[in-house]
Image (cartoon, rainbow, N blue to C red; front, side):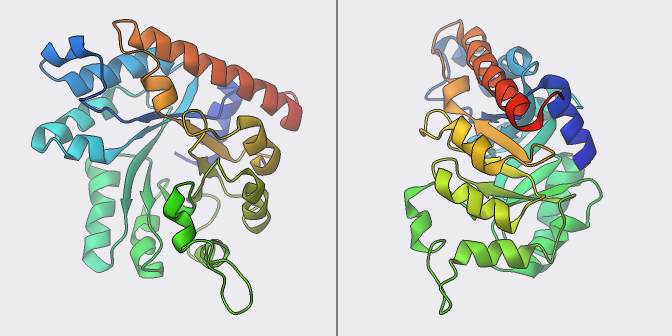
Length: 274
């Protein structure tokens, strides 16, 4: 998917919502456990009820690969039922070099046909570049995350007082462009999103942390929105686990619509009539 196609979807739906698919067998409604493929049944229902409001889906690969070969089969089936005009993100956080990186890229971009994949930057250009060789595919690079341990490395300053995450942002823009490179920027660091936007004014940000993790959608939009929206705000638990009963999919729809309605207001506030 191209950047223009992604922005078109944002305009059409008045939404920049990404729904995270984290199908935990310990958390999905119990009545699904008797299904032949509980994970797929759960994700299919979520997608069917939220696709009107979402411009992206982000399957967390760990929840699938933990189940072995059957989990990979479930993941492939989930991908097949996601509408083709909705952006897909493999939340796999890969990061290696040489042929290993090339084969990771081939696995997710060719074999499974994801639009994008999350990638860790720690090993540098030769761990990221293979993913950027695929036309109309995207790297979503970890830049400034919202987990507690992110401060262990990301906020360490060099001799000139520059935090590591800023060096990652600056250097990585030599590898890719706003057409194929996004950044993960945590919503719970609202005051820092503006700093990231100054360094990467045109790039899209994938923003986790809104909802269950306490991030503020209005703060994210205030500091992070650009002329093409430039944001994919992810909500996982707040949507997919809105109910543990048989109404789980309908409850997910309600939560997704709430976020979409707030996003519509924010898009109108900052970008005017789309």
